Image (cartoon, rainbow, N blue to C red; front, side):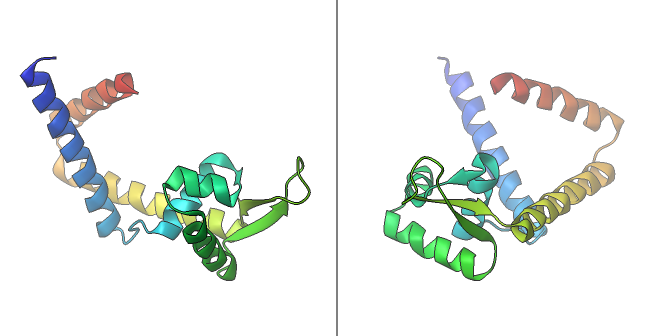
Length: 138
């Protein structure tokens, strides 16, 4: 791999990370351990505490504390596993789904405003090309 490719990869990583952090701060939707857990549940629909701990790279006990906090806030619910009656699965509550949707909408609206205010037609075309390239990397 060429040095130019390595430099491009490093700049892409840096810019994407900085952009995501900037959007989250500007919209007051900063990620916390609780929010990351909710996002995982949103993606996977239902997970055990062990699975959540593994996916987040934390200890089971730490995840249990996060789950207890989210349950106290009414953001998650515990359900019995259909495969094992002793096991519990964690799922999002309706209020958590609304909270996540609202945060996404805030971020999208802020980004749209930045695009409208800061990019001319040529800049928007460049952004479209950049997005197409990013999609190829996925």
